[in-house]
Image 1 (cartoon, rainbow, N blue to C red):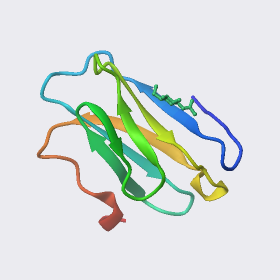
Image 2 (image 1 turned 180 degrees about the vertical axis):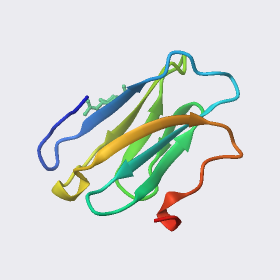
Image 3 (image 1 turned 90 degrees about the vertical axis):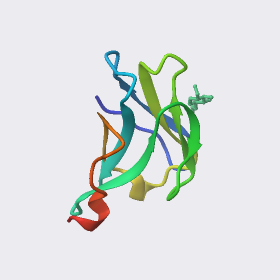
Length: 98
Ligand SMILES: *[C@@H]1O[C@H](CO)[C@@H](O)[C@H](O)[C@H]1NC(C)=O
């Protein structure tokens, strides 16, 4: 799937994961052109502010979907965004494994 917006207009990038297990954590990464995948956020429930850009990771109450809500997207945020499920032992922070 793809989504588009204009600079400064917020967007939700959504991911469906209907078979999520109780122990699983939701991770979001993005892959900017010419770079390696970079960790953006992870969470189990509720809404968590993103660390590196304006926005939120929003997990649905039933945990069957999640969204990366970018509140002030810029052209430089054009990328491939991934969500994945894992456990707390985790997934390496690929900012340091390029
Ligand atoms: C993104 O989703 C959240 C939670 O459902 C909602 O509150 C917000 O208005 C949405 N933002 C946009 C830009 O659609």
